Every structure is written in C-alpha cells, then in structure tokens.
Length: 141
Image (cartoon, rainbow, N blue to C red; front, side, top):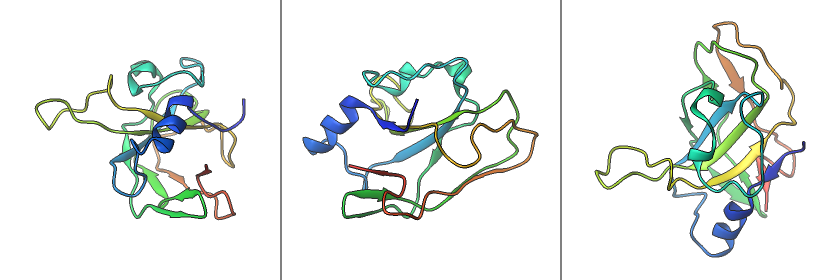
C-alpha cells in the first residue's frame, strides 16, 4: 500500500467541508494487522479501537502552501503495544455535548504507511513523527 487520501476526505476538501488550517486535525498510530485501509472508509469509527496504538494527537502550527498540508512534528509519549505500520489523519468532530469526540462523524483525511521509520515496534519510549520537508509535506492535494 502507498500513502493515500481517503476518497470522502478529498471530496470534503473540494466542497469546503474540511479546512486544514482551522479544523481540529488529529493523527493516530495504527496497527495494520488489525486495520486494513480502504479508500472508501469515511469516518474515524472505521478504525477499530484495537488498531489504534496511540491516543489521537492534535496537529499544531498547520500550514498549507501550494496545495501541500504541513504541521509541526508530533511526539507520541511512552508508546507501548504491537507494531505500528501506519498513521491515520482525520478531523475530530465533537458530539452534541460539545465535549466528547463523535467518531462516527469525524472524517478521515489521510493514510500514511510509507515513511522513514515505519514500521516501528514500540518499546515504551517516545515516538517522534517528523513530517517530510519536501514539496509534498504531509500530503498534497
């Protein structure tokens, strides 16, 4: 598998339903032995809880230049669990209480499984995700 954008995520960008700069964008580390990517998956609820090796982390200092999405590098602290083969990026949507994430309404954006350091087996230490500094950054529309 190669890095990819989810189909409905692309559509949401094109229809102004996703805003990289202002929306609450999260990333989670995933075990592909439990989750199999499909471009047609639409919401975060499609990622089984057992596949989520880390808690979702908010992307900060997001930028967009020439169609490329970027953000500050991310540190996942004290990671334990099975091998991590991918990262999933999504927009977190809160439920009606305004506090609790609604996974069934939080759209998937990107799936990254081809990057330096993947796969990685956690050993209880921190895992730092350093986004690409090339022309495509995290991903490019």
